[in-house]
Image 1 (cartoon, protein in one colour):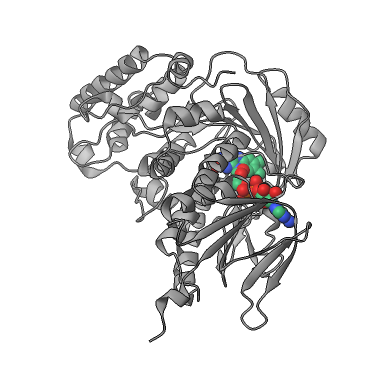
Image 2 (cartoon, rainbow, N blue to C red):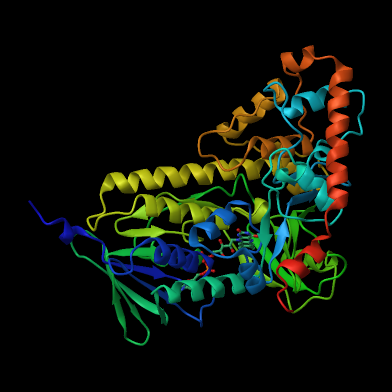
Amino acid sequence: MANPEDNQVRKVVIVGGGSAGWMTAAALSSLLSPRAVETALVESDAIGTVGVGEATIPDIINFNALLGIDEAEFLKATNGTFKLGIEFVNWSRLGESYFHPFGTHGADMQGIDFHQFWMRTKAGDPQSRLEDYSLCSAAAMKDKFCLPQNDPRSVLSQIRYAYHFDATAYARFLRDYAEKRGVKRQEGKIESVAQNAENGFIESVTLDNGTTIEGDLFIDCSGFRGLLQEETLDVPYRDWSHWLPCDTAQAVACERSGPLLPYTRSTATEAGWRWRIPTQHRTGNGQIYSSAYMDDDAARQSLLDGLDGKPLGEPRKIKFRTGCRERFWEKNCVAIGLSGGFLEPLESTSLYLIQEGISKLISLFPTADMPAIVQQQYNSLLTKKFEQVRDFIILHYKATERDDSPFWNYCRTMDVPDSLKERWELFEQAGRVFRFEDELFSKTSWIAVFIGQNIIPRTVDPIASSVELPAIERSLASMKGAIAQAAERMPTHEAFIRRYAPSGI
Ligand SMILES: Cc1cc2nc3c(=O)[nH]c(=O)nc-3n(C[C@H](O)[C@H](O)[C@H](O)COP(=O)(O)OP(=O)(O)OC[C@H]3O[C@@H](n4cnc5c(N)ncnc54)[C@H](O)[C@@H]3O)c2cc1C
């Protein structure tokens, strides 16, 4: 029998040192035994990183916990702030907004989803907003924050949060972490990639200074260009731009002004949307747009017009193509980060998808012969993840009543994937949302966006319908009151950060 030792991955080479590269390096250095598997990372200061990616979703807390990262230390090092959700402005109609919170809305009753009861009261109270029943939303609107309490009887247990931070500082923080745990960083530009003549496996990369780095498993974290996955292994890309037509961003930071907000704001504009991400030292801003419907000058102007403070530099333009690789894992190479695919940051999902790429890689960590079944499993899991996030993002564009520009007319009338059609129909006809196994977005998320974008179910659950309306109204009034009071009592986000994790800037 062959010695299993001969079939071990002994060396992993990560190509790229952006968020994807350093997240991967940090996770591998923490979870694989450095004695058994050596990890090297190659990055080029001359090429640099994409330098954006500053808003996250709560799953990042699990990533940090897995690595044993101290939250306050992490926030101080990255100028981080807390995020309770996203405010969407002008998405359904001009002048309207809604909040997509991380926590839940209200409390389910008799096993029936909360929104069913809320819908019953809505008829008699058209001004009622679903988000009045979310603590994250109520706190966000008052610029308040505190950490969740463990006691499930406390309304404060309903807080769920994520972070905003400086993307460059984040990569630096993870680099320190990974290097302390044995990851060897190599600076230089990769000029050539050598493949095995028989099976096409990547054998080594060679830098502009002549250094050659060999490996058994290569992780392509080289950004949009996909140095290994696209340029070397020629893996095709699934293009989803007919569903998500934005293809360009311009980003600029500005001086902070006003209170430190604990949420991201996304404002729909004439041909895309603008983000605003508050960190401790500045506010990150960007305009995402479709170049078919808006030119660069108009996008730049829209970005600058929407700033809360003085710009800190010139807007930077970034081109992208929405979609993902047909295969994330090919031969002995796994694409993680922008090299594997990109979905615009409307729901801050890219770092999460990187996390998923890493965790699935660790749970399927291969032998050196890279079994085909392992690759297939990985590819199907990651493809599903991308498709689920894609559908959720498309919903924001499609469920609009805006008809004030050719871009919104296109989005409102475009065809959407069948998987989204089914979900939409189920919600509109029957008010139901089902969450598939291992799916990222919760029922709360789907319901927040459906209702926020004015997709209101035609029917109410029969059990919720059979409960006396005054009893429902009393329960809802009590929940709303408890939430408003709890939000009122919290410290401001600014005061909380100043005490808990001041970055010193
Ligand atoms: C406009 C925009 C906004 C975004 N906002 C968010 C957000 O709010 N939240 C979120 O989760 N995500 C967001 N993202 C996505 C997020 O920025 C990326 O997922 C994340 O930064 C990972 O990028 P990366 O590491 O894959 O690529 P990059 O940061 O581009 O890193 C690529 C690395 O590869 C190296 N490299 C490339 N070629 C070579 C070579 N030949 N030799 C050596 N090294 C090489 C580079 O030097 C660099 O180190 C956003 C993306 C864009 C475009």
